[in-house]
Amino acid sequence: MQRIIKNGQIVDETWRLLPKDTTMDGLSNCDDLIVPLALWVEHAHALKARDGGLGVWLDAGEEIEEIAEHLSNFQVIALNFPSFTDGRHCSTAYLLRTRYGYKGEVRAIGDVLRDQLFALKRCGFDAFALREDKDPEDALKAFADFSEVYQASSDQPQPLFRRRA
Image 1 (tube, rainbow, N blue to C red):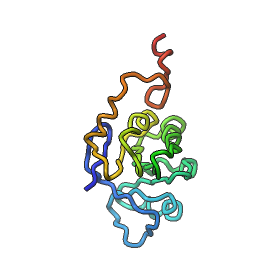
Image 2 (spheres, helix red, strand yellow):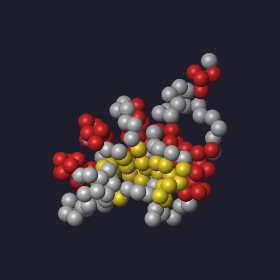
Image 3 (tube, helix red, strand yellow):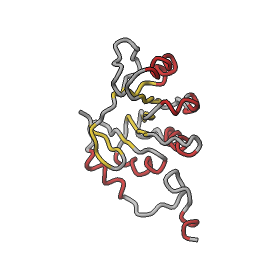
């Protein structure tokens, strides 16, 4: 069973992340599922009628605006990082928290490394599914790498110079 970092703790993964080529055939009615955006778009009505929890995942290049009016349907929004150098979803997480006021779980998936965690948390992520070859115990240390931040972000709306004034 995969373990993820959620709200600063290592927990067992309870959600099932479905691959892009998933169809509705054979999906359990009660599992907690994180479905690809395309499956949501095609089968939103049936997915909402299920008994289990519902999340959606967006690949890099897929925009949050495609589901903005449906955010209340999702307990989890997972944002895929196909490469650790692809930071497009940092903006997506920030928009979810600030523009859309999303209060559910925002999870980083894909090529997620320890070095990214501090910055991803500041953007609005609160859960992290690390790359399989990475140690979550070691990754937890990333949240203590810096004692102060200068810039404003979703976790600290005022920059340091405003907080000191």
